[in-house]
Length: 195
Image (cartoon, rainbow, N blue to C red; front, side, top):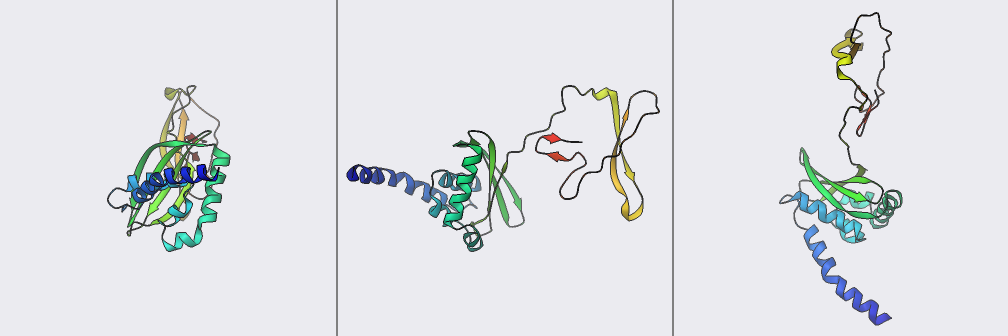
């Protein structure tokens, strides 16, 4: 039994070493490849290897035990990790954010790996994969028109969208004001436009 476990560990070592070496390649050269490799380390349970790729701030905020707990809680909620669909890179100043879209048994999630100028992992976020918005099939676009306007004046002026039914009025009216924070006028959440 012990010999079988030892043999299994020896057989798995080259694959694990290959993933670690691949993940340690500078993200500057190919951040998408580095992001994929980082996520694969998490999915395969190689938390110490993943932590070694983080900057000191991230290592303090997300040590191995916390990294393990975080990943395992994602799997507990979203189901088993099924693989990587695609990656996309965006830049903000010296940072590159790699959105690694992953399939889990019950959901698609974006594991966002942020690299600093020194190619160290400086941020890690796991969020629902955005879904594109499409109008509901019951919407009749020619039943109304929309125009940009402003409600209020001066410092309290609020940009607005006025939707007016087709035909002759008068029509009842309703004013909807979105909440605070990073909301748009439609109160968009993922692919849903609440307003």
